[in-house]
Image 1 (cartoon, rainbow, N blue to C red):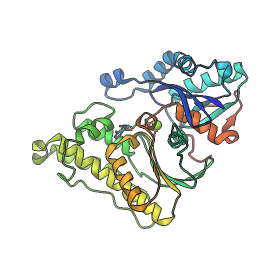
Image 2 (tube, rainbow, N blue to C red):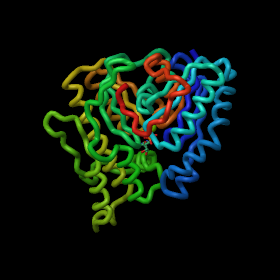
Image 3 (cartoon, rainbow, N blue to C red):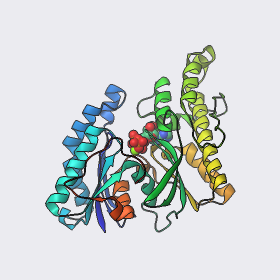
Image 4 (cartoon, helix red, strand yellow):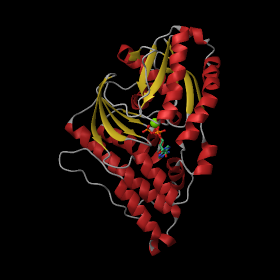
Length: 335
Ligand SMILES: Nc1ncnc2c1ncn2[C@@H]1O[C@H](COP(=O)(O)OP(=O)(O)OP(=O)(O)O)[C@@H](O)[C@H]1O
Ligand SMILES: [Mg+2]
């Protein structure tokens, strides 16, 4: 089954063709880095205008690269939320028009479910098994999700303030690094000492898997403004910050696993591309003998292949009528 995936929830304009929810036939993505450099972040109005300008060509390009005509596609999947409303509407309107004109089934996908199904892409059959535990860490979310099946998922722990990706981006800005800051901190941290500065780690409340990152971010700000901080190397600050975030995430993940054993553990969302987090999770997997799955970096951050994959895995549960599908910037996580 060939699914055309469309993803425009934030500022990446992406289209992809995915076979059977596991093989990526093509994946086209354009980012808006030029605007990030100019404005220091995402400007919603610019992001949606760029989607209007780029999406049709991205869809055609994805079909061409997969050597399939749009008529040869079996279904169309689109991110319906959560995300920026102006951005979502561009993808949803295009998908509805295509599904209606081509008489193809339409699938309305939750962007966060997409991040989870990214883990099934291009793995040569070596896929995670249910029930699995996902640590979903991205620009807007940080949560532990118990995935019982493709359509039954429960959030069992979440950030009470900033998302991990947001903490990376804000701390990077304090260090004078460009947006998005996660990859920049990751790179710089390789030259630093992760034990140089003791940034605080959020402790779990009794019985809770919730986490918090605003304290670490504030501690970075105070440290940079201090006399000691003015003399410290940026690489040491980046490495120490990154270790603090990874410690909190890994501690909550281990706690979740102590409560209930899962068949596999999956890392998803943009922050899943972080090398220190990947290293810590692989290490944990080896020590505990639990199979660990991490998508390749290009499928960690926003992409349309993960949306096509989610549609194939979730099937009828997310199939919608082209005339009634609407974008929902606050789409709830559970189906
Ligand atoms: N190597 C990395 N290390 C740490 N963070 C990273 C890395 N690569 C990307 N990120 C972070 O991932 C985030 C982007 O992830 P993603 O594209 O999934 O977020 P989003 O789509 O904006 O948010 P959401 O998925 O919650 O709606 C950014 O905060 C970015 O800094
Ligand atoms: Mg995302």
